[in-house]
Amino acid sequence: MAHPHPDPPGSRSALLICGGFLGLCVLAGGGTRQGLPVEAVLQLLALPLIVLAGARLSVRPMSRPQGLVVGWMLLVLAWNLAQWLPLPVSIWSAFGGRAELVAELRSAGVGIGWHALSLDPDATLRATLALLPPMAVGLLSLSLPRRQQVRLLQLILVLALASAVLGLAQLAGGPDSPLRWHAITNADSAVGPFANRNHLATLLVLSLPLAAAQMINAGRASWPGNSAPDAPQHSPSASSPACCCCWHWRWCARARALCWPDWPHSRPPRCCGVAMKTATSARVAA
Image 1 (cartoon, rainbow, N blue to C red):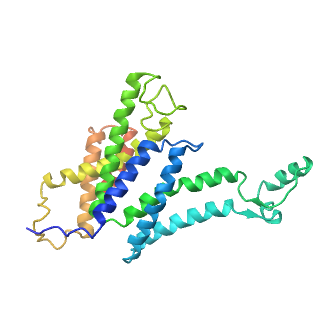
Image 2: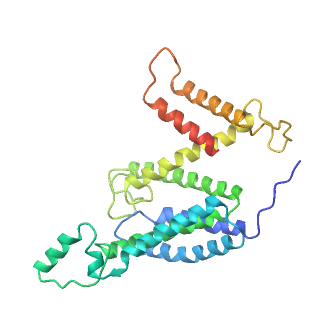
């Protein structure tokens, strides 16, 4: 029996830090737009995590997908900062919609000088700072081995399930339930740990493919023809394109049998295509 490869040094501590910070963001982040003190605390806590993630990523070569993710994060951050920096009037007034603003300011007798590209620099700064927690979790997860990345995805499922249970308890308690810890919220809906019901819905929706992939991985060993994870693989074509196509076809057939049982003697229901696409994407993710 083959023993699993040991995790790199410090990866378990990084997993605990990343998972704890992710849970803290879900419970205390709230998803508000006005900016609360607790959100400022989370943004400050994200700074040392970003430094830790950068130190872990710098000691080993990054793969191309990892480099693309890091480059995309830096590009988004640079774009937000570029809109916040002050520019001379000859530059920022040349962008679309600024000419009308300049004319109104001059008609009101307001002096026109250096101004940021953003029409609301304070809101742009808050949006930039709000990127720090997801960047910290994303960069730190890139430094983890694959097995611990799966553990992090499983933590998201646990947080989504706990949020759904909390939402049911909020509905049972009514609009004045003490489980609603935001002053401005949807008092007649389930919001979970958030201030807005749409944020809870977003968390539940993004957990659906993760839950499907987790169920596929859990039931993979029980499917006919599958061997144990540590058993030797005698077939050299286990990862061939033909085998992948076969597995793709089998999973589509399972999804079709589930949502369209009387095929081909009736028209498919509306949910059939969505269910087959979700099942196929979950199979690929697994």
